[in-house]
Structure formats: structure tokens, C-alpha cells
Amino acid sequence: MASGGTEVLVGGKYQGSDESRVRVLPSIDYQWSNGFFAGALNGVGYNASTQSDRAYGVRVTADFGCKERRSDALQGLGDIDARPELGAFFNVSPASGITLRSSLRYGSGNDRKGLVFGVTVARGLSAPAQSR
Image (cartoon, rainbow, N blue to C red):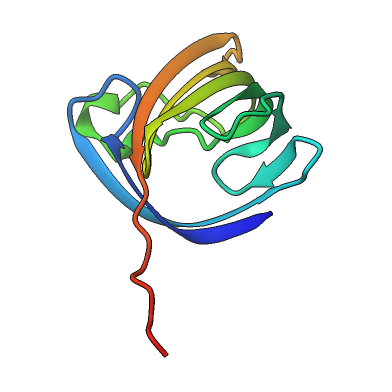
């Protein structure tokens, strides 16, 4: 099953920042019936769940790094290069259009030994049906 659209990401300018950053990105994802998936934001991986209201599994995602020029607080710390991260995820949809996402990723930082845990809330919006 293929899906696409636009994602609005709101978060910190960098890990641990209290300065906010808003990005609008295209979203293209594909999920095969055997559980494997590939997508622009979710990476490449395997969804081991067979239930429609939850998903869990493993994946490889991209850490796009961080340039020290992104914030005055990062000056002198150097850039963090982009790299792949290995990870696991668990997502649950408690209500229609709302998804709670969690992920654990290994491989961040300049030494590639960083471990990052993330939790997000996603709200899906669909276009109104057109009458014919």
C-alpha cells in the first residue's frame, strides 16, 4: 500500500533545544503486505504487528546531522555529519486520526555511539470528499 502527502514537523532546532523549528516535508511511504516498508521519513524496516491499531518492529533511518550554524548555542561545537541509525519502534493509534509514536535509535553523534529515545503525537488530516 502506497501513501503520500505532506508532513509538518514541529520540534527543537537540535536535540535538547528549547528553540523551535517548523519544517514542511513531502511524505512518501510504501508498506508491503509481508510487513516490510520503505519511506522518506520512516526509513526502511519491518513491521512485525498484524493489528491495524498498532505497529512495532525494526528499521534503519537517516540522522541528517546538525550544523553548528543552526543556533548560536552550537557555535564552536562542530558539525554532526549525516549517517544511518539502527532502531526499533512502537506506535499505537488510540483514536481515529491520532497516532502515538515511539522510537529507539542507535548510532547518533560524532562517535556514532549515541542512543536516542523519541516520542511523538501525530494527527492525520484528510481532504474532504468531493461530490460528483
